[in-house]
Structures are given as C-alpha cells and as structure tokens.
Image (cartoon, rainbow, N blue to C red; front, side, top):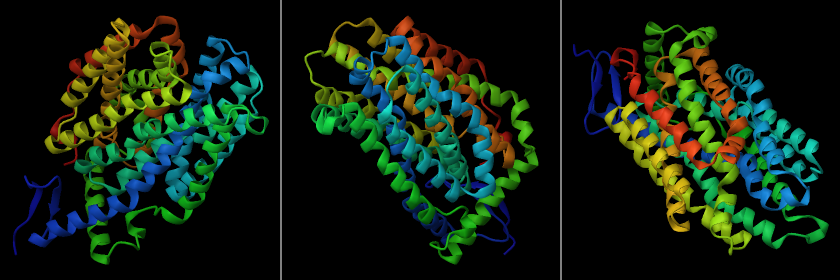
Length: 446
C-alpha cells in the first residue's frame, strides 16, 4: 500500500489523523473507541475533583452572608481577604506545574487536594481579620497548580481538535459547583447554625473540606500519568493514542521551541494573559458577590432560598460552555467564538447594572455568567497551539497565575465601581480579540 497522507480531516468526525504507510477504515473506529474510553475514564473523575476545588475556594463568598457580621469584618476587609487567596496561588503556580510535569499528575494532584481540603476545613477556626487573611493565603498556596496542572494533563490525553470539548466537560465543574454548592451551602448555614455551638459558616468550611481530602487519596490510585501507562486501554488503543499524541508533539516541536523560558518571552503568551485577566476579574467578582447581589434583589428570601436562586446563572453557564466548545471544535475556530462569548458577558453585566427590575437583573447575571464561562474552555485550547514541552507547562501556569492577579482586586473593583465596571472590562476583552489576528493555520496543530 503506497498511500501516505497527512493532516487528513474526516467531515463526519472531530479528529484529524496522521497516517503513514497505509489507511484502514478500522483506524477510525480504533481512534473513536480509544478517545471515548479515555473520556469516560478520566473526565467525570477530573470534573469531580475540580467541582470540590471550586466549592472549597468559593464557598467563602456564601459564608460572607453570616461570617462578615459574626467576625465584625468590614466590606473592604472581606473583599481583600477574598482576593488575597491569589497571593500564595500566584507565587506557587508555575513551580507547582513544573513539579507536576516532573513527578507526575497522580502524585502531585493528590498532594494538592489533600492539603487544600485540610486547610479549607481548618478555616472554621478563623477568628478575626488577620486569621482570615492567613487562611486564605494558605489555601491559595495549597491549591496552586491544580487548574493549570489539569489543563496540562488533558494535553497529554486528547488531540487538539478534541480539547475544547473535553476542557468544557471538565470545566462544567465550575457551574456544577455553584449549582450544587450554593444550595448546599445555604442549607448548611440555614439549618446547622448554632448546632454544637458552631456558627453555620463554620460547619460550611468543615463539611465542604472533608470530601477533598478523601478524593485526594483516591487520586493516587485512580489517575494514570501518561497514555503509555494506561493499563486499562487495550494494547492497540494504547499504541494508537501514544502515536497520535507523539505526532502532535513532534509537529509542535518542528515549529516551536520547548524551553520553559520561551513562554516568558512569547508575545502571544502575554496577549493571552491580558485576555484572561478580564475573565479572572469577572469570574472572581461573580464568585464573591453573586449571593449578595441576589440577596439585595430578593431580600425576602432566606439563606437556603438564595442558594437555590444563585444556582440559576451557573445552570445557564453549563449549557453555554457545552454549546460553545462543541461548536468551536467542530469548526476548528477559536477567535470568533471567544468574541461572541465576551459580548454576551458585556451584555449580561450591562443588564444587571441597569437594574430595571430584580428579574431583569437576574437575567443579566445569567447572561454574564454564560458568556464568561463559555470563553474559558475555548481559551485554554490556545496555549497548546503554539507551545510544547516545558514551555507548555510553564506557559499554562504563567498565564493562569499572572492573569489571576486581577482576581486579587476583583471583589474590590466590583464593590468600589459597581457592575458597570465589569461590563467595561469585558468590552476591553472584545476589543483585544478583534484587533489581534488568530494564529495562522501553519502554527496550529491539526
């Protein structure tokens, strides 16, 4: 068989295939069955891990409904404490991701989860402003490297044309964390307040930190570091996946260098940092303020009811993430999808800021959250399109860490300048996307 084809795209499938020496129809079935098996094995479990990550990081936004008054913390003090989480998070993000590449995802993610779960539960002992700051910094240090580590981990297992969709399925955890976490947090604070002499917010931290510790132990036994170690795949499936991912890696290496310092000096990395900083400000501000904003609009609801209503924007966001990511993968297009999602964020924050009525404000929050969250899985396909090796590990971590500097000030920005400020910030993201051209096809792996 003399047929030798490269970069062949099948219109009925979402995969590009590198084929050398010959082509058989069952190669398609083998690829599909392999990726399906990998997806079912890894994505639900990773989604569960990230769900607990978001709950343990963001439940302080719900705890503020009681905690702020109980500890006599001012609005500015609480907002600063919410954002100071990112001090430790930013400092340890890049080293953590590089260590994960060296020691393996299984060991490193297990370590991250156990440490953050313990610190989250111990946050029940916060007693004043300074202890609040201390626990938030420690939580940031413990969590550093989890999210970029997972993004890097997915790049080991899924071809680029599948990555936005798989990233979206994994990142559904953000929406699910609030869909389930907000009602759960409201229930705990409403019905366990004063039980055994503890405040509701103390029970919140204690009970929501324990599952992360348990899952951290399970990570060590369940995750597999690399496709070559996947005993749960058949030999044929394992060989196909290893060859597929190696071909993509070799293609990137032919075009781009893999030294970690390359990421620091890549203008495209800094462009992504600027873009992601708009998202970091918006998503962190929403996490800090959504329960309070909804409480202001519907002040006749109790804490549990606010938790239920706070889940609505995140349900909308889950749908948006899936639709945008599947469409982006199918069309192999990123920039226009990001622009449309960013415009939705602008529209949503504008409607919420206009405050025509409580219902319209809630609709605005739903649209804003949908737009912001729909950007994220599409965005995280971009670093792997021009970085490889150590540069990819360091680049992902650097983008996430430097851009999240905005997260330190997000709650303060919303508190000081209101909802219109978030509409303006996301409009800046739209302008950035419009004025910068997408990478050429030659610089993307297919």
